[in-house]
Every structure is written in structure tokens, then in C-alpha cells.
Amino acid sequence: MNMDARTIAELRVLVGYLGEQAPPWWTSQFFSPSAAAFLRPVFARSMSLAQYQGVTAAASRVHDEHIGVGRTFHLFRLPELYEQSAAEAFADPAFSGDLQAHVADRERAESRLGELARPMTASEGPLVLGDLGESIADALPSLAGIYLDAFRKGIRTFPYLREAQ
Image 1 (tube, rainbow, N blue to C red):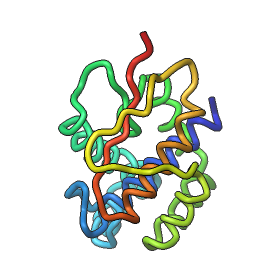
Image 2 (cartoon, rainbow, N blue to C red; image 1 turned 90 degrees about the vertical axis):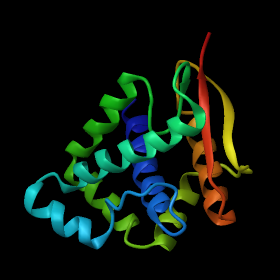
Image 3 (tube, rainbow, N blue to C red; image 1 turned 90 degrees about the horizontal axis):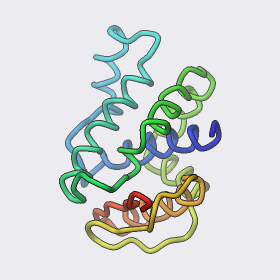
Image 4 (cartoon, helix red, strand yellow; image 1 turned 180 degrees about the vertical axis):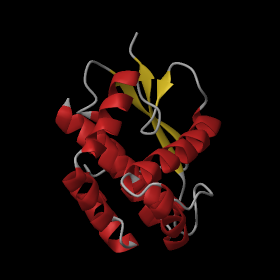
């Protein structure tokens, strides 16, 4: 689970950062220089966690508006076990520091997202990937690939998984 949690957290930061870039998918600016200047004094030891939580909430809201809420999950709203584990990944300062380096600019973020991705084709709007089974590990590279393709095409896509029956 630890590796899945780290991957979820990293994907959220990368997709969250890229989703704030022009053209924005959501209106938050948690990774902008002005937001960092505001957050740093208030969250001196946990600025990365504050950025992570903020962009996750903003992206989740937009995904929920396009996908709906119910028996579905997406990168920014997962079962509680994954939510807690991903947030705990930020307890490692080296991990959160490495993430900051990946969101220094759009090229670095897209490059890192590409390293985590399986080649996929994105389409505009909601996109079902299948069911969320016992492990999310198989879906994570597909999610990364869909987001990467969407960012490169300049379209907004909202991949999601259905709750396993």
C-alpha cells in the first residue's frame, strides 16, 4: 500500500499543478508563487501538505461536477484507506521535497507524469476506466496516461473508476 499511496499523492500533485496551468481546469492557484508566499508563513512546516490538500479539494470538486458523486471514484476522491495513506506520504520530508522539484515548471511536471504513465488516449469529458477492485495499483499508470494525453491535447478529461459490485 505504501507505494500506491506515494503514487497517488504524486499524481495528485502533478495533475493538480498542471490543472492550475493555462488553460486551467480548476481555478485554484495553490502552486503559484503568490500562494506559496501566503502559505509559507502560516504553514511553515507543512506547506506541501497544505498545497496538496488544497489542490485535491479544488480538483475533486470539478471532477465531481463532471462525473457525479455516488458509486464512482477518481484520482481526487478515493476510498478512505487510500485517502489516509496518501496524506500520510507527506510525513516524509524527502518525499514532499522531491515533489516540489517536479512542479517547478510545466515541462518538469509533464515529464514526471510521463514517467508514471502508461500510454493512453484521452477524450473530452468523463471517461470510465473500469472497476476499482482490491488494488488501485493497476489503474494508476492508466490515470497518469490519460491526464498526460489530455494536457498535451489541451482538453479536459475526467477519468474515473466504478465501485466494484
